[in-house]
Amino acid sequence: MLRKRTILMVILFMSIGISLFSQQLKPFTNSSEFFIKECNQYFSADKIPPLELTQFMAQWNGGQFTDSTKILMTSCVFEMQEKGLKSPLILKFLRIIHLFSENKQDQHSFISWLNTMHQLVMERSARNFQHFLDQSHDLMLKQELSRSASINWRYRGGDFYYFMDTVLKVSFKNGDLVCRSRMDSSEIFKTNGIYDPIKNVWRGEGGQLNWKRVGKADKMSAVLKSYSVNLDLSQYTADSVIFTDKEYFNIPMIGQLSEKIHGSRPTLRTSYPRFNSYEKDYIIDTLLPSIRYIGGVRVQGARIICDAAKSPEALLVFYKDSLPFVHIYSQEFVLFNDKITSKRAR
Image: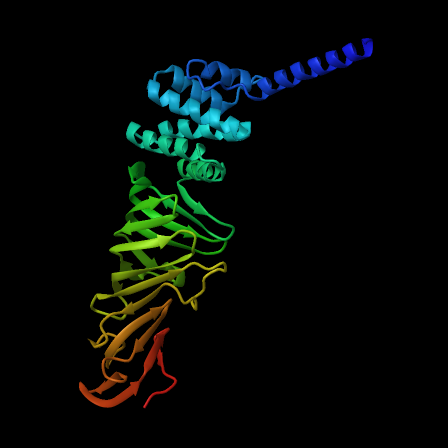
């Protein structure tokens, strides 16, 4: 009998211990009224309160949040706890909230973001929530849009804000879109855009790209109109750009731009950026002295490719004493370092 009582007492104490241990692991009660107190208790093991908590508490107590916003934030942290997400992620969440203030984001931008965070944390899996949390942190801290093992995309300068358009998106204005690899980079200067963080897609408007990767920053450039970039990739195309080459062409050309960022350092023989003119019957007298060119234009890095016109072949006309004296035909002529070459010319 005594043995049975002893066993029952052990089971009882174990049950109480497990219950108390569970309560210690789950200090958040989903009550905005007690949220700050629960945050203090949760991080009480730290002799010095984390900076993220101190900054967040100053905002909370300073009246920066409405009651409905406090309820949403409290619910987010409670659901993070329920999904077993640890304190570093909770601190990151609080830090992002503070960064909204540092980045001078308005209330509409913050509420749009917070509502999306709450929707994601309520999903069965925490994967999307964690991904968006990391993405939001990088955007707020260093204006980084996307990062992979080989490249990262960021928006340099300018302003941005979150807004709802069926799904959450981010609007950017008056800055530069930059893609970097370990050894290479490319920029679209002074461009605006809408970023979809869920699909990781950028839809840009305007801006200019130059050929600085191949040493022609002040000579070759393309002005973009509307374009789209999948930020999972290191390449994109843009239609109807206006290409200018101050060195060889006296007219702007309309065509398609292609850009690709490599893992290696660019050289004069790097084949990007690329341009392909829509028109294939240009008449150009400024290619080289005493030479007229008739045909289309492709650009691959620093190499200019004069390709076949609407007729079967491109044409170079050489002049002497202001009169044509030699006609050379080819599928393409390559202009590089002030020299024209062709594999099959006649």
